[in-house]
Every structure is written in structure tokens, then in C-alpha cells.
Image (cartoon, rainbow, N blue to C red; front, side, top):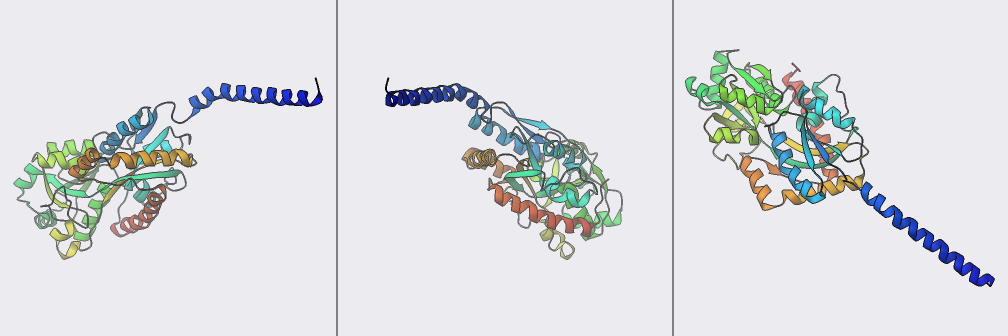
Length: 338
């Protein structure tokens, strides 16, 4: 065999070996590609609230898109901080996500003196899922018995009977709590705060007559409002909600004392900091795609939620701006953690 033939055969052998190694490695790589097992979406509140509703709306769509189950895991407590900390401490491998809220990522840093996570440094924003107004509502029977038909009636009664009304919320530090605190601060009224581990349990007590007023996220209360169990007095957004066009805003209904009142909520997916940008972008793209389908879009709009699906960069900007806004609300209202 000539030297030339030897070199040729040697190169061929090396090439064959490399190809064999690549073929052997291919199945292993495919098995390790994300996702190759179920993905958990942590909801930091109890089942039945808006955070839970929105997570369960997108989870099946992501399951279909990626061929793996996206499982909703409710971990309530401390105004969403318990669930948020679980995700902040989870491996950044794309298998643990958080349905974060304006509470966990906009309010709590200003409200809690020792937050167990950094809402900016410990998370990788994926996408804003939806924005929603809150709705100021009362138990329908209680509103009728007290002759309260609108916000002005409510203020008049609350001022004449300090401490006789209580205010339910989905937890201390949530947007539902802060909307109520802002209302109390601007109107000079007092209502005892009763924090629950999510909107679901709070709504049960509202419908049962054990709680009087709540500034709930609209989607979780819509069914009870339509059923006549709750009376909607006003929405907390700057504009009326298309889902309840006949219900005025708090600013409209409240007069000069409530000029400029606005306390809307938002909900979005986040991953632990350091999660691969490729995984983050793939999830964002599929969420945006599902939110754009007529069925899901119309369902969310009917519940009072405005779907988004924006980019990770735009969601990060929103979170940063919300820190500034809600720090001022917390300071001005004097809100405290119960």
C-alpha cells in the first residue's frame, strides 16, 4: 500500500468513526432536548382566582405545542411570595415556571421588609399573559340591605359606620388588597382587611355573606356578578371594561376624592434567572400564538382579561416600571402587611 493510499484510507476510517459517534450520540441528544418531561407552572395563589384561571387557560395549549404536560401547581401563601420563592430557587432548566402577578413582581418588594427573593434578579421574564381591571364589588344581598347602589352610597355608609364593613382580598400585598387600601386612603374610609390565600376562598366568603366588599380581579368574579350573587359598583381601571360596559370606573363614580384612581392587575410567565434564552423565546412564541387564536382571545375578553403575549424584553420593562408605580402607592396609602 502506498503512502497516499494509506492516508486516504486513514481519513476514511476517521470519518466513519466520527459519523458512528454522531449517530450514537443523536438519540441521547434528542432525549435531553427540552422538554423531555412535564413542565410545572407554579401559581402562587389558591385555585379559582384569576392567576389560576389564566394559567389553566394556557397550560393545555403549551402541552399540545411541546408534546409534554404543562401542569399547574398551586402554592399559595404570603401574598404570592411562597410560590414565587419556590420558582426563584428552582433549577433554571425550563421545567419550573411561575405565573407571576403585579403583586409578586410589582408590589411586594415595597410592601414586605424582607422579601425572600429579588423579583428582578432572580427571574427571567417570558411574557405578559394578560392585563385585567379589578372590580369593586359587594355581596348583593348586603348591598341591597344597606341600600348601597353605587360608589357614592358606599362611601357615605362607610363614613357613617366606620369599622362595620370588612374588605376581603386574595392576600396581603396583592393588587386586590392594594386597590382597597388606595380607595380607603383617598376616601378617608375604614374597612377591616381580611386576607385569604387567593381570590377563590375570598369569593366563597363574599358570596356566602361573610365578607362585605372586595376589589377582585374581574375574571374570577365575572360569573358571580352575572349570576347576581355579587354587585359590581365600579371597575378600578382608567377606562371602563368592555366586559362590563355599563359599570363605571371608580374615578367616574367616586367624584373629586377619587380623581386619578387606577389600580389594574397583570399576570405573566417567568422562569428562574439563567434559564436558556432559547427556552424562554420558545415559550413566549407559543403563548403569543395561543393567545392570538380566536377561541382563547374571545374567552379571555369575555372574562374581562386583555391578552398580550409580548416579548421578554417588553415584559421586563413593564416589571421595572411597576416597581416604581407601586412603591409610591404603598407609601401614599400607608398599606401594611397583616
